[in-house]
Image 1 (spheres, one colour):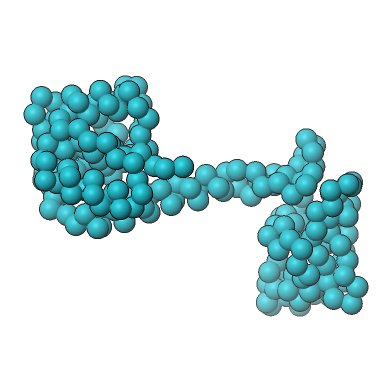
Image 2 (cartoon, rainbow, N blue to C red):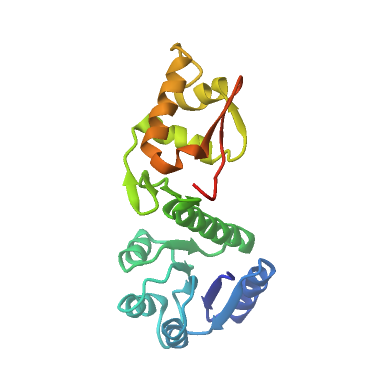
Length: 227
């Protein structure tokens, strides 16, 4: 989904320059020339990010941010020529997410914005459930469900399951499994791997057949639709 950014900046040259850079990155961009206009737009629409100047007519950036925070938690980057510590403290204390001091490179600002959205997408992806047939895994919370029933795995069993699901339909040798779950310095018996996988299958219940034995080589995770 296209990200929406609002630029609130009274200096037209900088406002247009930032817009052009962001449009090249495929962002949707709206412009406001003062705090009052920016606040009205920010409350009327849902933006993924607001680039907010401080020194503006009618309503400055700090006052706009204070009013915005009463109703919305939109991410805000403060942009200002002020560089005193007190200004940084005030910006963060009223809810700014980042602080960009003028003069700055528009290319660097765009990179910061790209990194912000990439990090948010990664965190969002981590929080969501990954579904494999009747099996559902949340890596962040380390919870596993078969249909709606939660199953409880040991740490090694959970790591085994993640290794299998992240290599779906790929045959994994016992050596590969040892290296990825137990580590290169593992000195135990290879039968430990088979025993651990047997316990994991038992806990998976009806979907135990998702983990196939490939005789003479190792194991493969493959979703079967009619388990």
